Length: 186
Image (cartoon, rainbow, N blue to C red; front, top):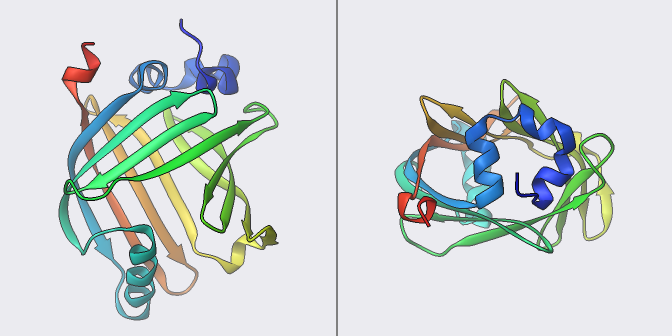
């Protein structure tokens, strides 16, 4: 097996990921497909639309999404693009290993410390710490994020959602994505 920073971070637990997720994080790929983007109702929807605007998400409905996943010496890159518009790229930097470490994602003034739970071969992000402009913020003050990828019917199930206690769902998007076969066969 070719070692990548992802497989190194996971160590022997890398084999617990579904083989297609292992392949994705050894070779990298671009995944494409239709996703459904929904907003909450009432106040939750208003907050969700504001959050979505900051994240570059489109309006509610079905959209085409491409996600490019690649590995560089400095980290794991995820670039997402809705409807062939501007690509938003996140850089995840590994710290330690799955046993005692996390991934750092920085977006503007926000820094997230994330770990990964493996459930039924899927990759589920879990937030450990949030900093805004270097100041740690209690996670209960901010929307809860649910983000995962898993294999379903041979395709990549992708889900990202944000909720607040009492208000419920703010915004979410999900779909089944296929690998770009041209990239897969190179």
